[in-house]
Image (cartoon, rainbow, N blue to C red; front, side, top):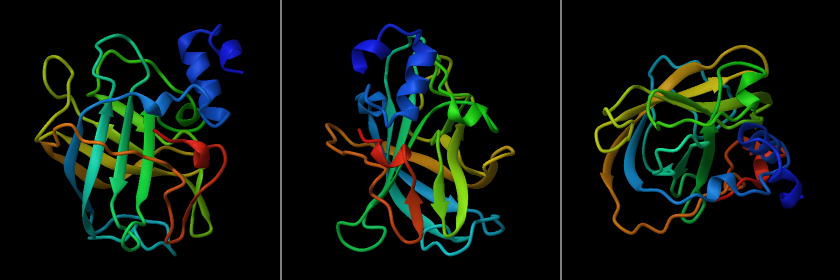
Length: 203
């Protein structure tokens, strides 16, 4: 399967890989890891019946931004809420550079910059009983398009149809030197359940 996908144009190849559970390991690209503060808005419109997604909640997380290349490639942002549901039970989200609203949030788009972008979970989660897509968006940062300490993402939620809306923000703190942090969408709980193909994403 990987050999067949390798013959397709980059954007099509990565989109198909995402729909098949990411056999090309889109989310395995290395990149810097930052400690980051997540703050959900006090008036956020959240799906019910989840432990993590509560208006006004604040968390300390780890965020990886990859790759560091300035080539036009699909870019990823991975977020880990460590011990979200107890010791050793994390909540992870894996996002790829994408578009806003169905069907665009199912597609990956190569970009030369990490900033000024929208990133999507690509496919669906169940949040309680509601199917949703998660995302983050990065505002314009440095002239080089690199994100780092002090930069922010907006944390986004969208429905099966319609566009994303903001529910909070993520502020990047210090980079963690030589960090060894792995991410897997299957790290989930508290009323959040990744559906196939998302549940197979890891990096």
